[in-house]
Length: 199
Image 1: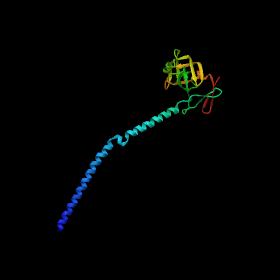
Image 2: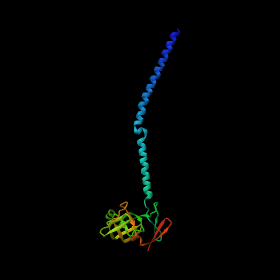
Image 3: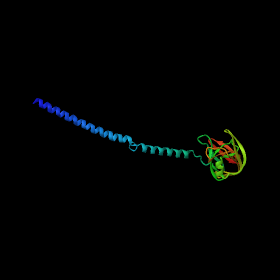
Image 4: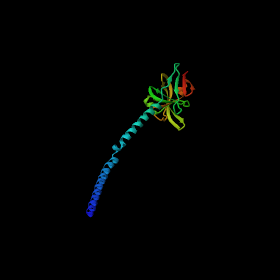
C-alpha cells in the first residue's frame, strides 16, 4: 500500500511538472511573438508620431523666429522723423523699397552709397550706370553706379538716389542703406533707436 501511494504521488508530481513546462513554453512563445512585433514596428513604439511631433515643433519655432527677427517698418513720428530700433545683433534694420521693389535695409553709416546685388537691381529695374570698382573689406568688386533710383522708407520717398549695383549681399532682397540716402537726414541716437529727421 505504501509503495503504491509513493508511485501515484510521483506520477502526480510529474504531471504537475509537465503542466508547468507546457504553460512556460506557451508563455515564452506568446512573449517572443508579441514583444518582437512591438520592437520591430515603428508605429507601435511611437517613432513615427514622435518624428511628426518634433518636425511640427521645429517648424513652429522657425516661423516664430522668422517673425521675431524680421525687421519692422520704421516708425514715423508726428513731426515726420523716422525712428528705427536696434536689432538683437546690434545693427539697425528696416523694411523699405527701391523703385517700388520691397527690400530689407541694413543701415550702414560707413557706406557711401545705397548698395544692392545685381539680381535685386534687375528685379527693381535699375539699369545702366557707370562701371566702377567697389573697394570692400573683402577686396575689390566690379559693379556700377546708377544715379536715378527712388528709395522709400515708410511714407518718406527720396528721388535721384545714387545706388551701387554689384555688391554681394547675404540675400538678394537685402540692401545697404548708405550715405547717398542717409545724407538727406540729420541722424541722432536715442538709446536703442536711430532717429532720422529730414533736412
